[in-house]
Image 1 (cartoon, rainbow, N blue to C red):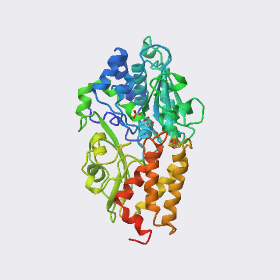
Image 2 (image 1 turned 90 degrees about the vertical axis):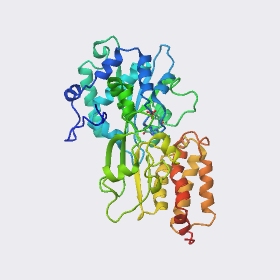
Image 3 (image 1 turned 90 degrees about the horizontal axis):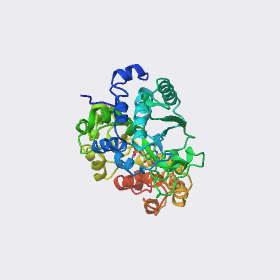
Image 4 (image 1 turned 180 degrees about the vertical axis):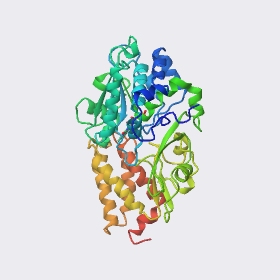
Amino acid sequence: METKPLTGRFRADGRPVTLKEYHAAGGYDGLVMALSMHPDNVQKRVQDARLRGRGGAGFPTGLKWSFVPKTGGDKYFIVNADEMEPGTFKDRELMERDPHQVIEGAAIGAYAIGAHTAFIFIRGEYHRAAQCLQQALDEAYQQGILGSRMMGRDHALDIHLHLSGGRYICGEETALLNALEGKRPTPRAKPPFPQVAGLFGQPTVVNNLETVCNLPHIMRLGPEWYLSLSRCKDGGTKLYGVSGPINNPGLWELQLGTTAREIINVQGGGMRPGHELRAFQPGGASTDFLLPEHLDVPLDFDSVMQAGSRLGTGCLIVLDQQTCPVKMVLNLETFFARESCGWCTPCRDGLPYTETVLKDLIEGRGRPEDLKLLEEMIEWMAPGNTFCALAPGAMAPLHSALKYFRKDFERYLGKG
Ligand SMILES: Cc1cc2nc3c(=O)[nH]c(=O)nc-3n(C[C@H](O)[C@H](O)[C@H](O)COP(=O)(O)O)c2cc1C
Ligand code: SF4
């Protein structure tokens, strides 16, 4: 039985899996199966598989779909491939190596919620991934997989590829909807949630690209098989990546719940000679640091939360003993401050201010009260105080760095 459903078909030469190869490996069988079922039963199968969204928040996918009203009218299914989180490079690999898997997953998701139009919203800089997807979409139309009679059945689906204008905020699902409508990409107030009033005011589901790639396999091989892939109560494998001073940085499909120790030491080949691990961010730039004592925490949604961070995108960033955590945090805050959409005051003003305080500290202009000030900034940008999760996410590395590496901050004040 397959243990690497998402990446198992990847070609050794790095080129995209062809349509012929995809078919030979059972490709599009999951879509045929879905089309033979009632959409409610497709939703139930995904709920039974306990698939949780891979876009960062880990929301159960089948449950999200169930909020879409069953009434008629236009509905939209959107694949979120914006992937601008620093340190994260998982969706790009899926698009460049196996684009038909993305199309099949999008078609199944669209069918499950009753949508006849879907979009793949892709990061603007991902030129190669966009080319691979467009070629696969053209093939899918030529073969009658998409279009007015999908796979020869009385069901229509169009999938459009949309290149993002190129800001981090465009990946936030409601800002993404505004971007697709041609408006300024600021997040929308929730409720109403997109499942009820999304793109052009119609019911819409936004799912991460890795989430969507799981769908063909859940349809084809069933929830029990999918649950058996994982080491925790949620189903499936996970694409885990590592960047930083390790011997073999990269991306691997592993059981959901694999530990950071295994990923860094086995797949990643361990720390580079002369470098010692000091901490790691488990799921991209907007997640709290964890320490060596957390290396054996299973990297699943609930366990990482209990350890004080978030699984996020599952792409780890490693901090070694040689790198100054304060400078690393400044680097991250510079990114977040630049990417604030400016819609709400705590984030628009607070992030550049945080950046300035950190810079002053590092450049010798720090004042004793600055650490307290940084803590206040974390409070002001806590969840619920801003329109979207960008600002609280930006505060996560700072919050955990102040907790774990306080002495490094104090050293800049001449106290260490
Ligand atoms: C600032 C910001 C940027 C985001 N960027 C992405 C992104 O690039 N890709 C993504 O899938 N989700 C991103 N998200 C999360 C989405 O809002 C949404 O939760 C996700 O696409 C839902 O997919 P899932 O249910 O399959 O996880 C971002 C959220 C925020 C706050
Ligand atoms: S938190 Fe920041 S990015 Fe999010 S809406 Fe407010 S200003 Fe925009």
